[in-house]
Image (tube, rainbow, N blue to C red; front, side):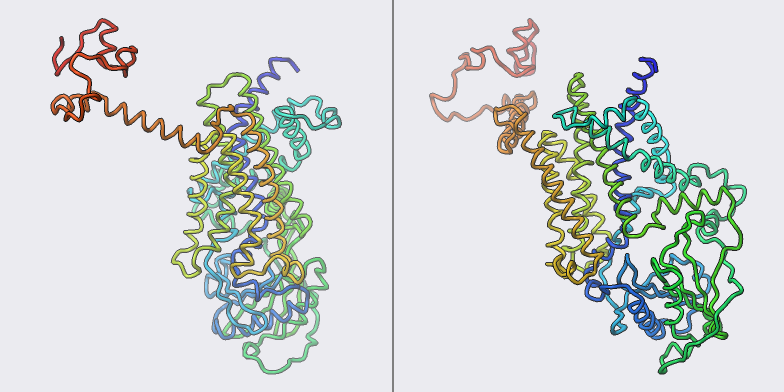
Amino acid sequence: MSVSFRSSLRELHSSVGLVIGWIGFFLFLFGSLALYRSEITFWLQPETHEAALPHTGIEEKVRAARSGLDYLASRAPGESMWRIVLPTERMPLPAAAWASGEEVHAHHGMAPEYFDPEDGGKVEARLTRGGTFLYRLHVDLFGVDRGTGRSLIGMATLAMLVVLVSGVCLRSHFFRDFFLFHPRPGKLAWRDSHCVLGGLLLPFCLLFSISGLVLLAQSLLPSALYPFYREDARSFVMESKRPPLLPSGNGAEKTYSPGGHTPWKDYGIPDPERLLRIADARWPECGAGELVISFQDDRAVSVEAVQSRGGLLARRATPERLTLVPDTGKIYESTQEESPSLVRSVWYAASAIHLGRFAGPLPRALLFLSGLLTAGMIAAGLILWERMREKVGTPPSSLRAVSAVNTALIAGLPLSVASFFWGNRLLSADLIQRDVWEMLTFFFVWACCFTHAWARPWPLARGEQLVVGGAALALLPVLNGMTGGIALPGSLMSGPWQLAGIDCAALAVGLGLLTAGIREHRRARAFLPSSGAHSFRAWLHDRLGKLHSALAFWKKGPFARSKAESTPPAYDGPSEVPSIGEETSSEKNGSSFPGTDADAEKSGQPTRTGGTES
């Protein structure tokens, strides 16, 4: 490879990688959090913690299904469809929803209500966007028009692929350098961290970048869908998300015997225990995640058990279904109508991988860790950019601006996420539009991080924000126990494990950020000038001194001088006021403000006295 070409690649990777690194850090951070949006929403609603089931086995699912039927019989009589969300490994609290008419086809449009599986009562939870807010920040830049946001993310992803390829081409001796890796101080340490993490996470980055582009194809290339979905582009999404299902011909005869009279049995609904046990045997790794009951003329015509998560990537990890027909008692296994085409299989696989629909607890944790490490790799590259530009003499204003943005992203975003969690618990549960106030808390703290990063010397600002963000995240388990949730010791001993996982992750990440912030702050204090400019008192004194100088200059300006000449000052004492023609100390020293008479005399220009030239 020629030297000129490698230099071009290096310049491309450095210049384009700066802006793309900002976007990439944002996307990978919130993409990692979006993998646990259900668990995050559960954490943010402490009213649901006590009603959650510590285990989600078959016995708990049967009990939750019966309680859900009782709840729906009293809450939604005469509806066309009932839906019971059973407790699963991701959400330990059951929920119920219902719909009528055309709303039965809007599966995601039904707002579920949580209920207590023990007594069947409704669980009143505080209003929050929860993990969906973080998910929308990743998908379409929450607050931006959905089409515009997804188009911007798609173009940034294309540029990210270019940066990835250029980075790989630059490391011609990657494997040799990797096996010879050893900690080194300063710029070399950041370079090695960026390169080694980039090499290890290259398959992950490529896979998720390409799968994200496939998901955004309808936003980047709308002309491909327009001839076929000219009237309703939304129908493409509905068709692609749920492939057609047909019942197979083999069914099992009804063998259950009805127990005592319950209200839902008046609708012809059989006891769900047998269906759920067959589903648990059919899908031993996850079991059933939902029950869907369809009605016609106030009589149940089908009861479906939906798999908790699918495993076939070529089918978009679409959950399988078992359908019980109440009139005959037979159970049918739903199968696909036909094998999807190659294009549809690729689209389904990309969607299942990118959204993590197939992932169990361990694969999901690995995806989360890989996403955070990718964000760390990008952060190391951004810091390396600063270190490189310090050596080549980049203009201070440009370097300061880039450092401020890097600080607000690398240290400010974790602090803003922590503030979102703190705002959720500290805001009143009865506050009107409290979900909006939670989001405003996030954006307000992030704006404060930008301001702080610009006002303070950037090494100190980054260390201070990392310390505050790390402390805020590490204290989330304490906040959870003090504001109505189950404390970390209790959740570790008796569950729910989803709550314990969020607390442990926040504690670990918070301690890591806190340690990094303390080290960064100490390094900044050591490398800044020894005149004390690093202290907050010196910084405040410097800002006040500049403000005082500006006010003094304004008072001695032309407007203030003309006013003083029109109204002579009062005589306060014989010694402090100089006599007419006496030189002041500043005139003796030859110092004056720019634009005054002393400067004019030195330059040979006519002076002004009382508004006339002399």
